[in-house]
Length: 80
Image (cartoon, rainbow, N blue to C red; front, side, top):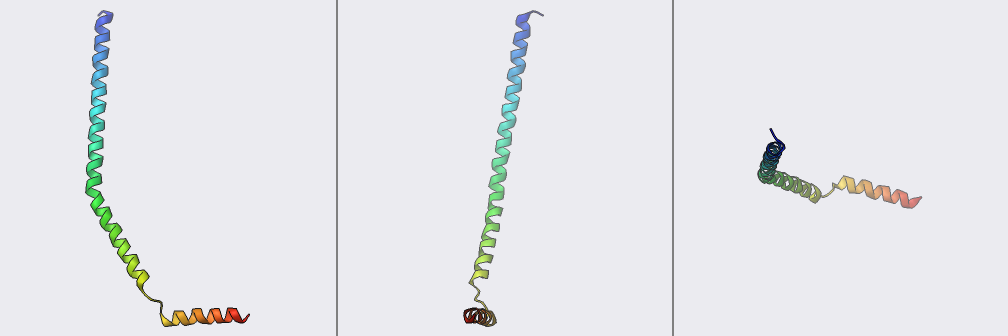
């Protein structure tokens, strides 16, 4: 084989490898976007559930015993 044939074969092999890598990356990006689309709804639902749980927890008022204990502690602190 002469040098021209070897260079043509090398170029063909290089182009084939680059196309394979490019197609693989396109498939990988497509799979990631598909997974992002599928799992975004699940993650959004979990975030909404956690947000609703924290707002209901925060909206509860403290008990009268808790308020009395805090008032007694403040009163004792002010006496000192």
